[in-house]
Image (cartoon, rainbow, N blue to C red; front, side, top):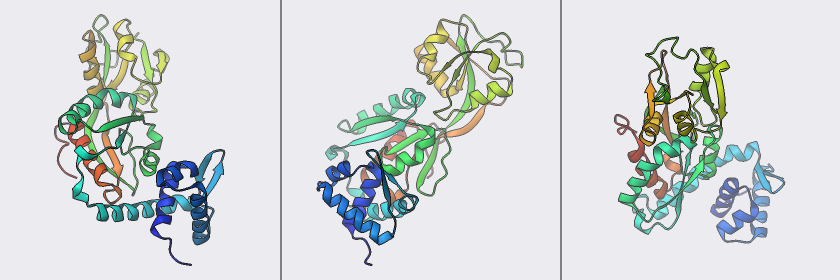
Length: 303
């Protein structure tokens, strides 16, 4: 049986990304029967269903997942060769970039990134998508985000990564209820805010468990956004990354940072995109801008 042609490969890649025959037809500007016909040809070629309909979603099979990476990369290389990798001009870009961030990432990284985009490409539009740490690779491969920033370590041959800053954890409380000097007894009698680890910051919860402090948790929340205002009006304490605590202190001057009595470091905050060969010229440019905007001193050089 002949190899799939370029249009069939493109249909497969877009269907894998969008999980919808209707959306794929719209993206490719063809009819839905054309997409269905192409999918049937691909099924015959690979001897696999490739996608199974579950409700309104086309769920890929294991074989489709195996094929997607190599086929997407090959398609990206062809497109880059035809378009020219060095020909991207942000002033002429009429699309939108999608950046995957956690709630805490939005608060930390959006201000410097938007300031950078304002300087170099005011016409570029950015959409932030809420990032689930467990879905970083899938979001990048499907193209629902062009880049992602997270403390979660993602090991995949299909993903490019570079650390952009280290992570050191501290305690944060109000000026009216300061914490004493670091010691094992510094949290005696203090109540804690526990924040979900869904965004990738697992150290605070681990520390509360390991140091027998879970019984002192008075409030559990999903995200950090409301925590500074809560701390300012109570005697509660939260454990969080230093760079985030510094942002919060800038917004709420009555908050105070305290050092922890035990080592408090984790994997670094990392910028992820698809592999170099699978990036469009626009995505490669966007990655450079994001990295330049959010990388801390000492993390701006190298691959």
